[in-house]
Image (cartoon, rainbow, N blue to C red):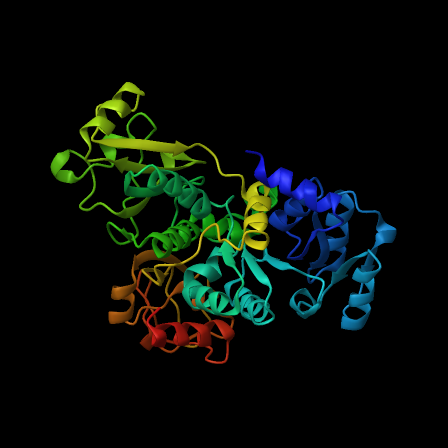
Length: 430
């Protein structure tokens, strides 16, 4: 009970701390920096951002005095800054994994191609990799997880995002001997697969999000990537291409998520799903074949069974990240990791006609969006995972709107780290 706070308090008493590098001072990175300022024995020692002033402002908001913040892109100077107890701000991302004092790197960028570079190098430098970057994890997570195991460090997603929160519920269910039938998340935004950064520009400004990020939420790509991450952790699959998107409520979920033959909407169990009616929470549908367990569940108010809802009506993004940081650095344990391999993929669909020679732009763009399918199908049909798209991904043919894009239609950047990791992952059958 109170283990984490107790252990961190003891570390602080002993003059020890977890020293962290934060990648990205956007909405998530800034809120994480503030949250960590409330924690014993967790210190933000380095913040990387392409705009240094954003990083400086984030640290000042968290209560760090400006005269304690030093900007440098030089390794030796950065080392001295940390040794003297100051906080470093840098536009040189290499300092995050190279500086010896850093215990763990936290990627808050949401950029899959850049995230792949950071994760690979962080692991190679034998530091823990904590990722808000589900876009990267859903694309090359299995190979990064394999590298981390071999290096003796942790590669993990965070508790506060929906995938980590879903796995937290599943761990409770498995720990009670229950069988999980459905793992699902609420969808916070409306679903418009043809949304663009331009159409969402004003809404993004009001929500203090980048237009591309909000577009990835509204067009469903982010949901698909998150559910891909859950599949790769549990071994589940979507019940249908892109999921059903069943609208439900806590009162109706058990009935709605039954098999069709029993009056529900599903063809199979052991599936992932999303529902607009359950936002901002996550939920699982569980069952038991034991009569005494069913009697007790009914007595406890879970209904007649045989299926039951376990519902977590929130996820707290960066606010829950310190729990993941503690588990990774102190207990060497991941919150969510792709231990089942690449079970599912989020593949690419054209939002509009794309002309030969155009770049695809990727997640959150006005050109493409993603849907989840099985990795088996993705490989058999040579489909393009949306997380593999970089600024150098070019259409080699005219691609009509609504086309499911395969690798014969594009030229990918074979020199990009994320492409090389994906090829390695496929060749290792991870």
